Length: 185
Length: 215
Ligand SMILES: [Zn+2]
Image 1 (cartoon, chains in turn red, purple):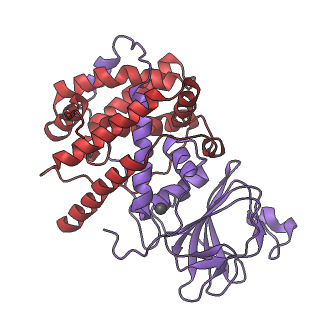
Image 2 (image 1 turned 45 degrees about the horizontal axis):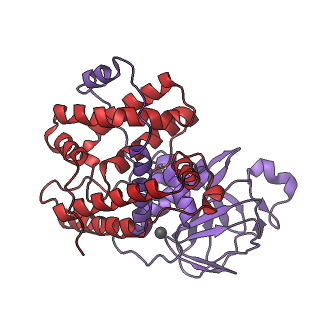
């Protein structure tokens, strides 16, 4: 069985151009794609338009400044930006620093594994499709969960998205990174 | 990259990891979860998977119109100098997230009796998180908790009614679990423990003294 093969998405290519070549035109296009979505996402939790735009600015600046940490072998661009956005929302709205895991270190820029990047993207695309196929009420619960509006007790009672395959795929990327970092030492 | 790793057998339950990835976990628990992820590749992969799910939600979010000037303000700041943020590395048995709360300094231990020491990292209305130092063979004082308690082993190991917990293992105990963790023989057991309520040590310190010790 063959699936229609997908290409690496424009957002990933733009993000790699930002990371590796500090490409402003690519950043500008990433901004056009993500900033309106980020604002919509942030406002869904009840944040006003003005404050949401300030958070969007901070998030997009972080995308530029921390681009070296972007590793498409472990996360697609949306996943990476989602986490930056949630961190910033928590800083601004709850006035606290969210404890973050130790960073694994910047991915080595040479020899990116295109098949791994593509596989992470495909899995992320399938997750998006799965989200779209959910019944509206189920979908709303998932959205609320990832907007940070449900407690862990509330999350434990709901049926989740199928995360197993993307998790296995990401694990390969993590193992590869760990291996490369060890070799680099 | 971690040097020798012992096999971790007690991981973060998925709902907690999802809540952590989504940013809805109270700070004391979030610190324990972030510390476990720092030690555990498997939970890091699950954490990343939850970020991918969050990314899907972001990707499909309804787009909101941006005011004029937002993009220009971002573009003109791209070259602005930024002060580097301090990065807190792991130090000895203490993972990076713990070192961040300790601001890079070693913990300040306080004796709570029976050779047990603690170092409170934060205590607020949302709960508390502390480091515990338990000599080998010593029981963590019999305690109960009102709600969820997360305990991550950083050094040595302990055992209780539910099993054995070694370095990197995280015990999840709810209010129904009456347990008596005992540090195993060997190195003293050092744990990171979070609760959503002040711990009530039952046998060691009279209740009246609790505010004094903040336990
Ligand atoms: Zn784990």
